[in-house]
Length: 160
Figure 1 (tube, helix red, strand yellow):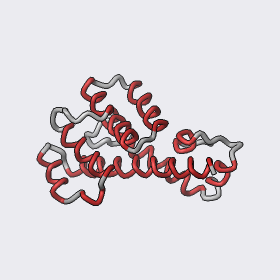
Figure 2 (cartoon, helix red, strand yellow; figure 1 turned 180 degrees about the vertical axis):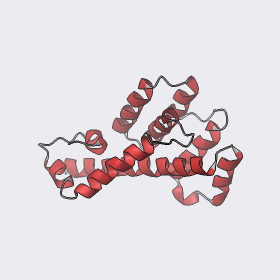
Figure 3 (cartoon, rainbow, N blue to C red; figure 1 turned 90 degrees about the vertical axis):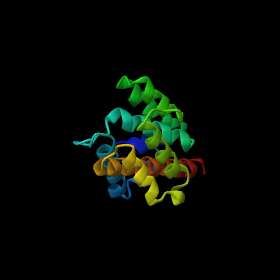
């Protein structure tokens, strides 16, 4: 069965790389379980699904992953997001709070993770995010950036 990473790379059951991924089923299953728990958790901690998808689309764009960007854009569109979330997803920086702080933090961790400090967490708190929301945001950022890197690596392998 295909997962989100297979779909992002364009893999199907006939591809050798698809079969190679299944040599480590715990990684395939783990990545998909992680995706589900981050994108559609049972308790969203106040970080709504449309916000998560808008941020995922934004990160896919920052990472130059057109396929994942289109996928997240389609998922977001199905939720009929607000104009503010469409602006967030598109990569704009002129946003109202708390989205402006969330966007800056997401961009920083996506582009320059080594530059993120405790002070950046404090800025999220000052913008009104609770500790569970900050954890949920961190998990989202980690997963989407992981997903884009795995997809990029698999595309390289496929092209070799």
